[in-house]
Picture 1 (tube, helix red, strand yellow):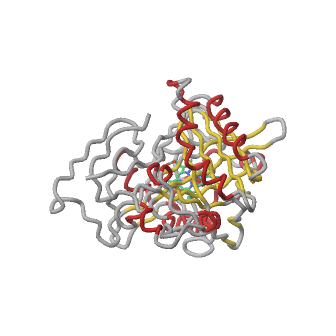
Picture 2: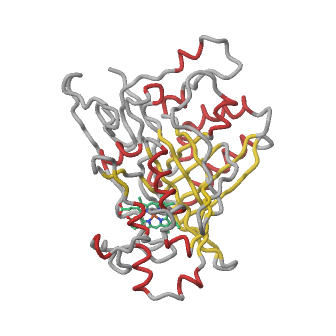
Picture 3: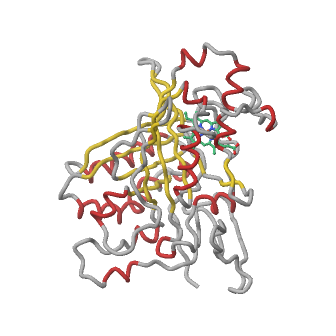
Length: 366
Ligand code: HEM
């Protein structure tokens, strides 16, 4: 059996990150295709110089750019970010064709790789947003709360974030939604810690979740805990980072969420911005404003190495684009060996089944 290698989506929260969103100019499509094929080797070239720095790069492709670059099948869930206008808050959609999510233990590695990408893209793209994120004390956001606690880990993370058999041409891929939030720190600091804890649904100092009956209906946790019809919780993999500039009074959280289908993150966004029930919107939004919003498809590493035919390719070549259908290393830190056995004993993907139906999930990419 073959295997599909994912991009390092499941790397986990690091000390430093760069989030770079660009739009691609008309006529630059071929150069961008060339760069996509070289992303992994550029990341290796920069990362190899500081092995302990654990540089990892994920690249995502927006819906409009996908259609300019590739013919043949398209990822089932790929569409532009859907703007949401609620009674009080707006989840804006902003331009973006490519997302580079660079993570490392040191900012110099992220910086250098972003520099190498931009050298290749000079004159071919416009930068829509560049945000440099940093780790803040014990995984806290700038609101002072520990952020990331309930992230799935190990196999649960792979199931939540990576496409399985349900879209066989794109197995091992992922969907990523990003939003850059700015916090109104004066308003936040004007409420008591007890009130802040009711906004989030966890205690601030020791990060303990409130019992369900104590969580307000408009708390961040209530609105972001979503379940299937059968009661199974639907998770995403978040890798939020604080960013900011005390000198200019900018304090923010860069939200980034990976999921096997964008539907899950979109449901969370509808709950937050439109409210569940309608009108009961997330109180975190009274203190945080989304200033960007984008949705990108994250191809598997194998698909990046062997890109689908370009739009100008001969009809019929598209069939060659399908990658092998079994997942191999998925960028999970640590070894995850999951025996699959024969097709008869495998986790077959049923409709609505979130299992990947995959083989071995080995280890992290170097
Ligand atoms: C949980 C902060 C935006 C989805 C949390 C927690 C914090 C937090 C402190 C609790 C600890 C944890 O489990 O991570 C923030 C901040 C945001 C933000 C500061 C931006 C201002 C979002 C957005 C989404 C989201 C936009 C989804 C679209 C979630 C989910 C959980 C969570 C799914 C875990 C819920 C659970 O299972 O308990 N967030 N978040 N967050 N957040 Fe956010």
